[in-house]
Amino acid sequence: MAMASNMKSKGYTIGEVVEQTGLSAHTLRYYEKEGLLPFVTKNSSGHRVYAKSDLQWLSMIECLKDSGLQIKEIRQYIEWFRQGDSTLQQRLELFTNRRKALETEIARLQTVMNKITFKETLYTTAIKLGSLAAADNDKNIMRLKKKLFDSPDDFDKKVQEDN
Image (cartoon, rainbow, N blue to C red; front, side):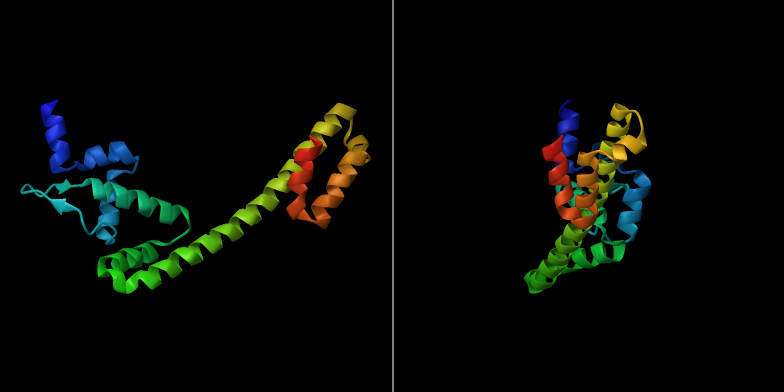
Protein backbone atom coordinates (compact mmCIF):
# COMPACT_ATOMS: atom_id res chain seq x y z
CA MET A 1 0.00 0.00 0.00
CA ALA A 2 2.84 2.41 0.78
CA MET A 3 4.32 1.63 -2.64
CA ALA A 4 1.09 2.56 -4.40
CA SER A 5 0.81 5.93 -2.65
CA ASN A 6 4.53 6.52 -3.22
CA MET A 7 4.00 5.80 -6.93
CA LYS A 8 1.26 8.45 -7.07
CA SER A 9 3.64 11.10 -5.78
CA LYS A 10 6.08 10.10 -8.54
CA GLY A 11 3.37 9.92 -11.17
CA TYR A 12 1.21 7.44 -13.03
CA THR A 13 2.30 4.69 -15.37
CA ILE A 14 0.73 4.37 -18.79
CA GLY A 15 -1.21 1.34 -17.50
CA GLU A 16 -2.64 3.34 -14.62
CA VAL A 17 -3.64 6.16 -16.96
CA VAL A 18 -5.32 3.64 -19.28
CA GLU A 19 -7.23 2.25 -16.30
CA GLN A 20 -8.27 5.68 -14.99
CA THR A 21 -9.20 7.30 -18.30
CA GLY A 22 -10.45 4.42 -20.42
CA LEU A 23 -8.15 5.56 -23.23
CA SER A 24 -5.90 2.97 -24.83
CA ALA A 25 -2.12 3.01 -24.51
CA HIS A 26 -2.03 3.44 -28.28
CA THR A 27 -4.18 6.58 -28.01
CA LEU A 28 -1.95 8.00 -25.28
CA ARG A 29 1.15 7.42 -27.40
CA TYR A 30 -0.60 8.92 -30.43
CA TYR A 31 -1.55 12.04 -28.45
CA GLU A 32 2.03 12.39 -27.31
CA LYS A 33 3.34 11.95 -30.86
CA GLU A 34 0.86 14.58 -32.09
CA GLY A 35 2.07 17.09 -29.51
CA LEU A 36 -1.02 16.97 -27.33
CA LEU A 37 0.85 15.87 -24.21
CA PRO A 38 3.98 18.00 -24.17
CA PHE A 39 4.22 17.89 -20.39
CA VAL A 40 4.58 14.10 -20.02
CA THR A 41 8.00 13.13 -18.78
CA LYS A 42 9.96 9.90 -18.94
CA ASN A 43 11.80 8.22 -16.12
CA SER A 44 15.40 7.00 -16.23
CA SER A 45 14.20 3.76 -17.85
CA GLY A 46 12.48 5.68 -20.64
CA HIS A 47 8.95 4.89 -19.43
CA ARG A 48 6.33 7.62 -19.54
CA VAL A 49 5.41 9.14 -16.20
CA TYR A 50 2.10 10.97 -16.13
CA ALA A 51 1.38 13.67 -13.56
CA LYS A 52 -2.06 14.54 -12.18
CA SER A 53 -2.00 17.59 -14.47
CA ASP A 54 -1.51 15.26 -17.47
CA LEU A 55 -4.72 13.46 -16.50
CA GLN A 56 -6.47 16.83 -16.40
CA TRP A 57 -5.08 17.64 -19.87
CA LEU A 58 -6.34 14.29 -21.15
CA SER A 59 -9.80 15.13 -19.84
CA MET A 60 -9.66 18.48 -21.66
CA ILE A 61 -8.37 16.88 -24.86
CA GLU A 62 -11.25 14.40 -24.83
CA CYS A 63 -13.73 17.24 -24.16
CA LEU A 64 -12.35 19.23 -27.09
CA LYS A 65 -12.48 16.17 -29.35
CA ASP A 66 -16.06 15.48 -28.27
CA SER A 67 -16.90 19.09 -29.08
CA GLY A 68 -15.74 18.54 -32.66
CA LEU A 69 -12.25 20.02 -32.64
CA GLN A 70 -9.66 18.32 -34.81
CA ILE A 71 -6.29 17.17 -33.45
CA LYS A 72 -4.51 20.09 -35.16
CA GLU A 73 -6.89 22.57 -33.48
CA ILE A 74 -6.33 20.95 -30.09
CA ARG A 75 -2.57 21.09 -30.69
CA GLN A 76 -2.92 24.80 -31.50
CA TYR A 77 -4.83 25.37 -28.26
CA ILE A 78 -2.10 23.62 -26.26
CA GLU A 79 0.54 25.70 -28.01
CA TRP A 80 -1.36 28.88 -27.16
CA PHE A 81 -1.58 27.70 -23.55
CA ARG A 82 2.16 27.16 -23.45
CA GLN A 83 2.74 30.65 -24.88
CA GLY A 84 0.98 32.19 -21.90
CA ASP A 85 -1.16 35.27 -21.48
CA SER A 86 -0.27 36.74 -24.85
CA THR A 87 -2.67 34.21 -26.41
CA LEU A 88 -5.66 34.70 -24.10
CA GLN A 89 -7.68 36.35 -26.89
CA GLN A 90 -7.07 33.45 -29.30
CA ARG A 91 -8.08 30.94 -26.64
CA LEU A 92 -11.23 32.89 -25.83
CA GLU A 93 -12.17 33.01 -29.53
CA LEU A 94 -11.58 29.26 -29.87
CA PHE A 95 -13.91 28.46 -26.98
CA THR A 96 -16.50 31.06 -27.99
CA ASN A 97 -16.62 29.65 -31.53
CA ARG A 98 -16.80 26.09 -30.21
CA ARG A 99 -19.67 27.00 -27.85
CA LYS A 100 -21.59 28.65 -30.71
CA ALA A 101 -21.05 25.61 -32.94
CA LEU A 102 -22.26 23.32 -30.16
CA GLU A 103 -25.35 25.47 -29.60
CA THR A 104 -26.16 25.16 -33.31
CA GLU A 105 -25.65 21.39 -33.17
CA ILE A 106 -27.79 21.08 -30.05
CA ALA A 107 -30.59 23.03 -31.76
CA ARG A 108 -30.33 20.73 -34.79
CA LEU A 109 -30.43 17.67 -32.55
CA GLN A 110 -33.43 19.08 -30.69
CA THR A 111 -35.30 19.30 -33.99
CA VAL A 112 -34.33 15.69 -34.71
CA MET A 113 -35.52 14.71 -31.24
CA ASN A 114 -38.81 16.52 -31.83
CA LYS A 115 -39.43 14.51 -35.00
CA ILE A 116 -38.53 11.24 -33.28
CA THR A 117 -40.81 12.14 -30.38
CA PHE A 118 -43.61 12.87 -32.81
CA LYS A 119 -43.20 9.49 -34.50
CA GLU A 120 -43.15 7.78 -31.12
CA THR A 121 -46.38 9.58 -30.19
CA LEU A 122 -47.90 8.77 -33.59
CA TYR A 123 -47.19 5.04 -33.29
CA THR A 124 -48.27 4.91 -29.65
CA THR A 125 -51.55 6.50 -30.69
CA ALA A 126 -51.85 4.14 -33.70
CA ILE A 127 -51.46 1.11 -31.45
CA LYS A 128 -53.97 2.54 -28.98
CA LEU A 129 -56.50 3.30 -31.75
CA GLY A 130 -55.82 0.13 -33.76
CA SER A 131 -54.39 1.63 -36.97
CA LEU A 132 -52.10 4.26 -38.40
CA ALA A 133 -54.98 5.73 -40.40
CA ALA A 134 -56.97 6.27 -37.20
CA ALA A 135 -53.94 7.91 -35.57
CA ASP A 136 -53.40 10.18 -38.58
CA ASN A 137 -56.98 11.43 -38.12
CA ASP A 138 -56.57 11.93 -34.39
CA LYS A 139 -56.95 15.63 -33.48
CA ASN A 140 -53.99 15.56 -31.12
CA ILE A 141 -51.75 13.94 -33.77
CA MET A 142 -52.91 16.39 -36.44
CA ARG A 143 -52.20 19.32 -34.09
CA LEU A 144 -48.74 17.94 -33.23
CA LYS A 145 -47.94 17.33 -36.90
CA LYS A 146 -48.93 20.89 -37.77
CA LYS A 147 -46.86 22.19 -34.88
CA LEU A 148 -43.86 20.12 -35.95
CA PHE A 149 -43.88 21.42 -39.50
CA ASP A 150 -44.99 24.96 -38.68
CA SER A 151 -42.60 25.56 -35.78
CA PRO A 152 -40.19 22.73 -34.92
CA ASP A 153 -38.73 24.70 -31.99
CA ASP A 154 -42.02 24.64 -30.07
CA PHE A 155 -42.92 21.05 -30.89
CA ASP A 156 -41.15 19.36 -27.97
CA LYS A 157 -42.84 21.63 -25.44
CA LYS A 158 -46.22 20.80 -26.95
CA VAL A 159 -45.57 17.04 -26.91
CA GLN A 160 -44.53 17.24 -23.25
CA GLU A 161 -47.67 19.24 -22.39
CA ASP A 162 -49.91 16.76 -24.18
CA ASN A 163 -48.39 13.60 -22.66
